[in-house]
Image (cartoon, rainbow, N blue to C red; front, side):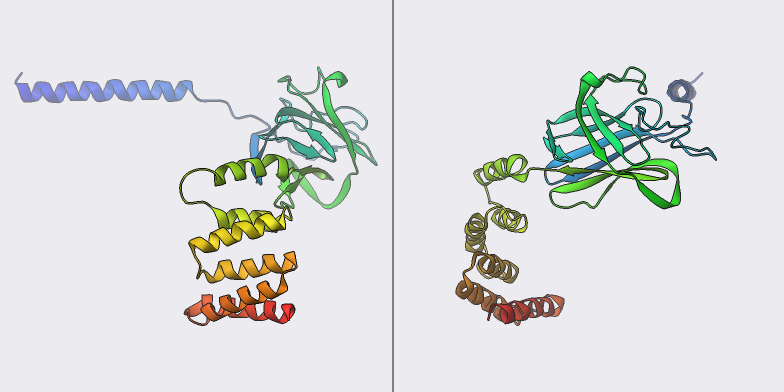
Length: 289
């Protein structure tokens, strides 16, 4: 056998070996699909990440609440392994402050009221080994009767704001909510102020708007916007927002001056930006005057 044929033979053997190994590895990683598929949902609220891991059973022509899921008994809130929720920072759930971490979610469905329970994470299967002594919080929430049927059990996030979100649990024709809030002063401000002390170009504008839009500290918002304008003195968008901050602060004369300058600069730019800021500043100046 000459060298060229030997080379092609070795290449063929190599391809067969690699292909066989890949097929065996792929086959070994195969998992039988679950009857109730798992799901992971995540929501960012300010600097807080909220993650829920749960399994999703379907109605399948069964009667659910008061039958398959009895009233007034602890329910795993899903199927198979216990449902888990993870908070990256401390949060407030229905007025109860809890630490960051992972918790198991249980509920006690009732005709007129549900109880939502967050328990220490014990990696439980279902609620068979549930113990009330492990509860971190237990809150009451009224069930809402839905007009349309929710076939597959669903946990979702609704009404997301800059500092809060509603956790929704829905199945069959029932939905319940839990309110989750984030303390911005505790979870964001320390990190934000630390960032402003680091070397490099400072994010003064974004920091200013965070203070302003979340009603945290109007004086700090004003100081930061001044610093942002020192970096970009002819930025018509920053000038307009500085006028809004000054209006909220009660400095109407300075607010008018900032808005007038933004309006002047807007008349010198082309296209949609011109139209947008002429409209915004005209409305603001009418209000200020």
